[in-house]
Length: 68
Image (cartoon, rainbow, N blue to C red):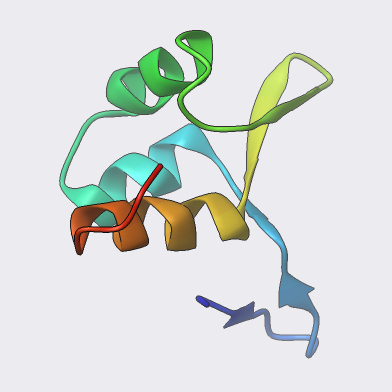
């Protein structure tokens, strides 16, 4: 699992569509498309999507030959 620790020692539990796109070399639009198609889970907070870090792990597992 990917854990990102912020400066204050807080572990980041979510990422934005932009950060997800950056991780996979894709655009934020690609990330939002995955959300709209219900291929990944996300929550909407104050009009912005937040994607659980566990979804990144799930995408990586699928890429390695696992099931979605």
